[in-house]
Image (cartoon, rainbow, N blue to C red; front, side, top):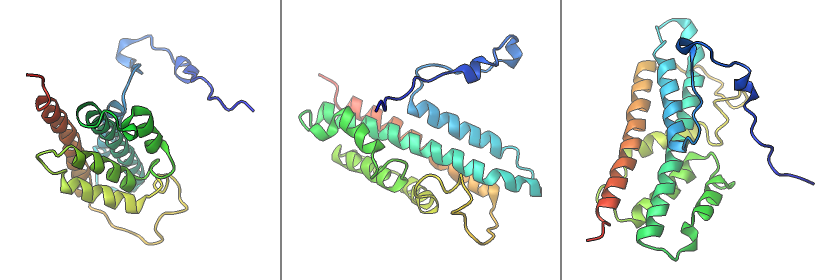
Length: 204
């Protein structure tokens, strides 16, 4: 049986070709997980900016959580791949567990997949092995674990079957501020780690 994936078709987008610049939106090629993480966070922030304190705003809570959950997952995977590559390049070139193929196999496997807690644990293992001078941000860890416990498999925000049976009253602006702050901090941690690692491994 042929189980090879079918090639991606963009007929969905090609069916709405742009002819007026002011109506243009572009799907760029060669986007990374980090690029997409930013796109999802930006979309969540734009959605959150429509909040007006009216009952209709209840409809944006789960889509907001879904978008930000995806943003955190992709950012963690981007950061993890970089840290593993840095370990392989500068510390453990002969460690087969650090090959790009093996790292991707773990990230896509059943043990991690879309689960934020084991993904975070994988990242922290690489982070610790590199002996970085600054600890991984504790506030980011706390939020990631809260998201994990609310939506372990990555599908609870998307379907009704696993939502809580009781009403929850949320201060939405405070929630948005926390998500934005910790996502930005996670991105900054990756930027700092990359700068720190590369600067400390330059050839004399």
